[in-house]
Length: 474
Image 1: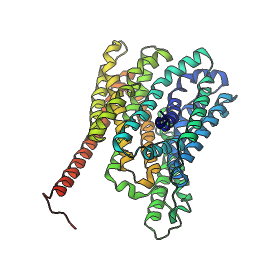
Image 2: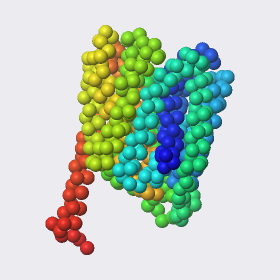
Image 3: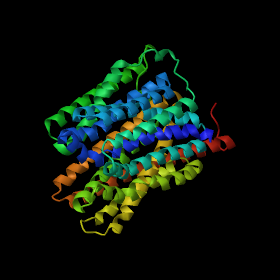
Image 4: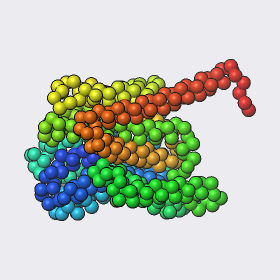
């Protein structure tokens, strides 16, 4: 039992992060009435969390590689728990939004450190695959249970209860981490003395601006001046960030380390998996946003009924996790990754039968296949990123993967929301978006299949070299 406590601690930390993505959405109407909050404040109460989360992930990963992942995990966890208390005590909309932004900052420190600690605790690939499956399943359960838990808490108690829930879970996680996860190795190389402050600022500004533009585009429109300004700011800042990081890595000075070494992207397995992370979040979360609106607006479901209707999709981690742990241990991550992507693509096409009066059972294939495909792919991709990352850059590598997923989610919600509005009818927009989501998953499936073929060719070449069928160089 004691050997599983580190995994319990890391999983609980990610549970909090994923629960707060969805648990707050059902409380928004009550928050608006209680705090007299306008639409803009309510939107930032939901979107501000993910915006700051995406913007600070690279910084969180870099700090973990520099100061130790256990320490940064505790920083993030403590900050997240304290911010949850501030949200629960908020008496104005501004105070609540500030608390949500602080929650996003804590999550950005917590998540990449959690993945790096998971890798360190499970050096064996088979054991690591099982651990990643449990870690991801807990997160999937949290994400799926969010609307239901939020609905029950709001109906039985008050909207503040969705934030009070984080306090005992956060406190227990801090206790387990401090007691059962040992301190990890801290970087001691000559370039670790200074941490690239210019790169940190440019990375944070670029990612926050880009994520903010995508979040605002879904409601304000793609040509709204604030959206255009934020998008241009984000692109310029990220371009400057790339230049700074390249110069630091290729320069002769040893006084600084680049926050994100560009050479990391020369690892084909890593860069392709990061692209797949973007594609699955783009397709799945964009369609999840529209499917929520479909059940609420087109079918007239209330918040709790909508949460229950979505359960066949969002709780697929319960099925995906045990399947993945067995398959990945034998085949590696690319087989389940490709299978999940192709299954998800077929599932999105199942939404083409959607209409206001279609029987709910007719949608079960679309819900279950997309949920199982997305969860299987996400867990397999997480395992692949951990394997592809260098030992001294696990925090930054996991941060890049999570940035790709966050940006993909924001882009999918913004684009699919625009399609649904401009298509001349919600159902028509839903079907068009389903085709776009299927295309994204198909592209990801092709990329995953290419990684699988490349891995098999390398393995066959190594086996041939070992058995003497081909001459070995050197």
